[in-house]
Image (cartoon, rainbow, N blue to C red; front, side, top):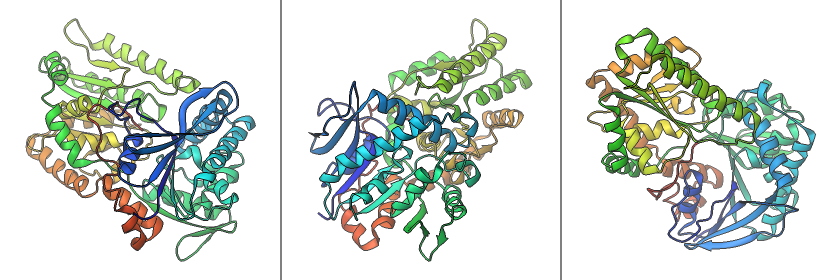
Length: 482
């Protein structure tokens, strides 16, 4: 069966029962990857203990092996809420002004990465292939190397990667970002992200080699691997979901109004306030659309304990109240705002029902909502995607109306154009994007990355059992967004 695949991520979601719905996002992907092959998924259990972390726990559900570690309250405060989400997340998203660095948080981040390495180390075999995910675990590769492991270890960054000048705003950045040089392959969403990190390495004294970069005695390769979706399955899901009772209720409640849909976590990187201002400008400049179009903004809350996230919630609700108070009446609410998660089935149905998908982040690694919206459309009568030029997906989905989310008038004009676009143009824009997603689905992403990580010949045996990677997702899985 080839070497084991060990996937490591910050969070591991174990089903409560064998029949429980699978969690969304990477959780579903990892479970699908390991369902019929040797390997494991290692990471935080989601549980918070009062004191120091105890031993790891092994769990098997549906023949999938999980190895879980708990974190203490101090770990959560310093590692997760602290350096990961109050420093690394804003810096990687070009928001140096929002970082809140402290030495205690940096120490906690390094401590939890060492703890992960301590728990994982005795479980590893010499031929295991290890795949580490995301900004929470940048130095885990270095910690595993220091414990004598010479395994093939890869890393994938799901966020954007800012240019060197911004990355260097992280105090003691070499201790964390330099840790990525201890991986064999570091994957990024776009070529721009990859090049930004390459320039960072060179700015720190790295030398370019024939295959990659050498930094402080370590050799690392860099690559761009745009994450995608399970396109064919999502198309089927959307076709069926479009006839669901929930979607029918939404359509009925619109009373014939056109639907503009936004689906995002409540995060300052998503550009939700700018989107609301653009929708307000549409109504302001085009009175003929008043009473005829509704913006539905689905925004599950996240990281509410971090100050900036509470501030963005206050700003968003204030702006929506202003627009609804200014333009709404007893028979029409311009903006509907929902702070909850929906199942994949309901979301797919909403995507299919929406005349316009509005995906306008200020900065995003990829943004799979854009790809899901395209896959969900009826090819005979597709909606229009309005997409930020700062989303990684804009590099692939060039049939969208590409906008600068900071330019309110231009986004409002794009919305008007999308609402008034003739059917023939909508089809011409949609078809090439769907073809691209069918060819470049999530399985191809996984295969491309792992082939680059372990080499084409070994990859064939490694990949034999993971053709379902990032597939087989439950229709009832809750919303999980990046």
